[in-house]
Amino acid sequence: MKIPSRIVTTAEVEADWLSAVADLKASHWSYSKDSQIDWFHANVSANDRHILVQHGRDLVGYMHLAQRIATADGRPSHIVGLSSVVVSPTFRRMRIGAQMVAAASAEIAAAGTCCWGLLQCSLPLVGFYAHHNWSVFTGSVRCRDKSVEQPFVRDDCAMVFPEARLAGVLALVVDGKSF
Ligand SMILES: CC(C)(COP(=O)(O)OP(=O)(O)OC[C@H]1O[C@@H](n2cnc3c(N)ncnc32)[C@H](O)[C@@H]1OP(=O)(O)O)[C@@H](O)C(=O)NCCC(=O)NCCS
Image 1 (tube, rainbow, N blue to C red):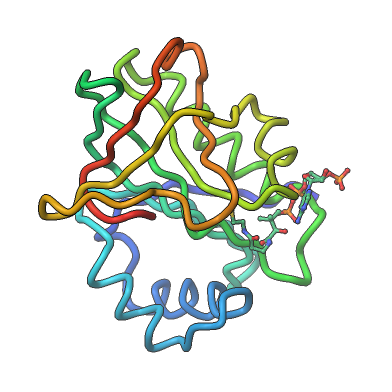
Image 2 (image 1 turned 90 degrees about the vertical axis):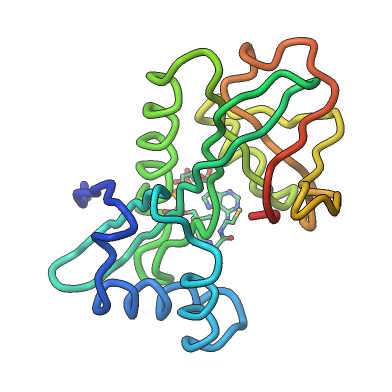
């Protein structure tokens, strides 16, 4: 089944959509709906984008596309961070997740060569992203938030896209908190 998806700005995630996003995220991550909404207001920027997959009146897929500045071995870049990737439990294995990753990857591929994508995931999901040509990044990835530097990865690994734009790079530093 092909369920249409759309990419929207943060301003377009109005209150009822934000409520649906929080419900969907709470279906997988053990944070309350209120804390998901608070997190959104505290961490999502006006220039971030969001993929919404809607079936009838229901939100069945969501992905946050964080727009960040980073450096790759000191070279400034614009990055798109994929986070909060989630599909409603009853709609899983229907290629909605694949559709969202493909849409995000197409945007990154179409952007300039100083743009690349970054995400973190657990080892069982590496294949899911690798199917869309995301690659495990074996160098160091750190976040610098208000001059405090910390590892980017809480989960098992960082993945990047497209790998060719980071050929030979050993160290990535992302402005702001991890996502
Ligand atoms: C991960 C997730 C977004 C995948 O979405 P989905 O719509 O179910 O995935 P798709 O139908 O597009 O799957 C495409 C392929 O990816 C692989 N895949 C999908 N989910 C997977 C998972 N959880 N683990 C490993 N591989 C997976 C499968 O090979 C699948 O192919 P198949 O149809 O032959 O089985 C969904 O399972 C989900 O919301 N999980 C909970 C939240 C989460 O873990 N998010 C990821 C954070 S990094």
